Length: 288
Image (cartoon, rainbow, N blue to C red; front, side, top):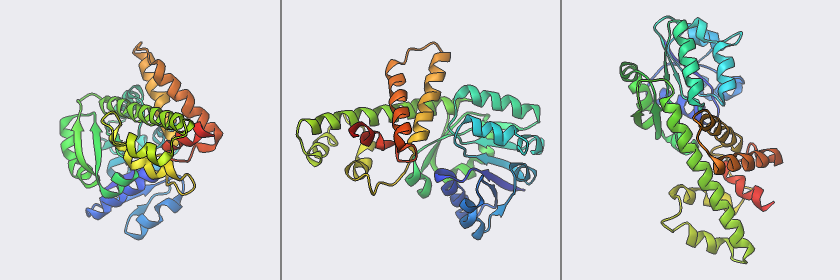
């Protein structure tokens, strides 16, 4: 039986390619077949529907955009879950909220399928290099079974507990910090420019301070030139992650005032035309 992989966007396509490089046979499906062309050329088997992936896989990995998409692909008319072989394992690497992961674990159990949530820390570059960090919620025995797959796609795996949703919980925290740091830095950079400091001078100083998040040095080229900026992590997905983080916080009765404001600003940037740009384009939205 092959390893199934559904979802071949910026992250998924690179993760699947690293499985191939490790000599793992994969069967793939994506909403648009064109995104699978390189994988197919390198030996991947194309499946017309998610259900067709399930019928031929003992392990099925999903890397999809949001809970709504995951739900459709898993439980929709051509969904894979009811077609998975009893005892097989679904590894969901999508960034979703922990409550949704628990719902999917329950649905999987009804079909005799094991479930593991394993979202990743890292963007396009680490995905291409096989340097992702997997955040795993699931049984230790299941993790051992797929450790070679995760090792082919990442540099580290953090097992956060046997309960479904533990990986998703940690991913919510990480992306909330990421979004807030990017927004805060963008606001300060915009204020500094309004004070008549040259952007290059501001970046030279601010990016080398201990109070500045280290990842911001990597996005410096995207802040300097919007026209040639590459998309490592689309802003629309960051907005989605903030929405899910606030949803989770509300379920836990935790006040997240600044996080709610961040969600609002990223949403405005999305609606202003920055949805498919890198999430660092929140800076260009603030300047517009």
